[in-house]
View 1 (cartoon, helix red, strand yellow):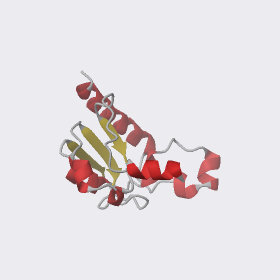
View 2 (cartoon, one colour; view 1 turned 120 degrees about the horizontal axis):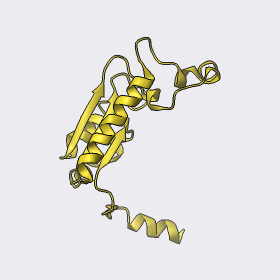
View 3 (cartoon, helix red, strand yellow; view 1 turned 120 degrees about the vertical axis):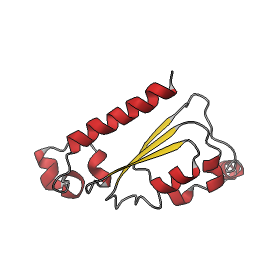
View 4 (cartoon, helix red, strand yellow; view 1 turned 90 degrees about the vertical axis):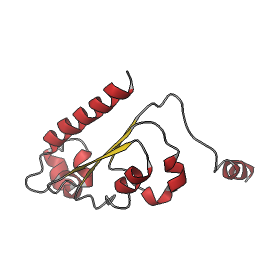
Length: 131
């Protein structure tokens, strides 16, 4: 119980780590659980990427919330029915049959191409931020 009380006492403290100089967030969730004031204190470059068809972490209450309140944030919304799980690794044939909700994308969504595009976005952010 004492450990919990100590942890609760630190709840309002900053968790900033000076080693972190930029953030690349993919389909972030729990936007509603982070206060606007907390987000506004973030001063490093942040790039957020999300699909336009993300039902697990809907754009409006998650990625858009973060982007709206982080002053150095850039939001990229991938169009064309891109869902939350497209960012997972390329599925195997077994994965497609046993976990279709995670492994089967809508027609026209090219998971491999999206991975390539997202990797380029991350490289761009980190290349600039880590100079």
